[in-house]
Image (cartoon, rainbow, N blue to C red; front, top):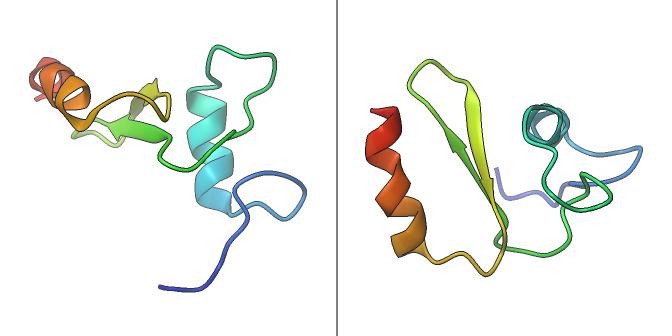
Length: 68
């Protein structure tokens, strides 16, 4: 659980492949550019939103009710 994993590149963890495929982001590449990038998954397991590292937890919390 506490092992280092890759979030980009050929050795990226399968979870991040799935997250980035579902929500590729707004940049030129779907790569995760910095820590604290966030993904929101609905109760059916669909990846529904991706948030930049500068998005505050309060901003994320504001959209969660849309997916409940």
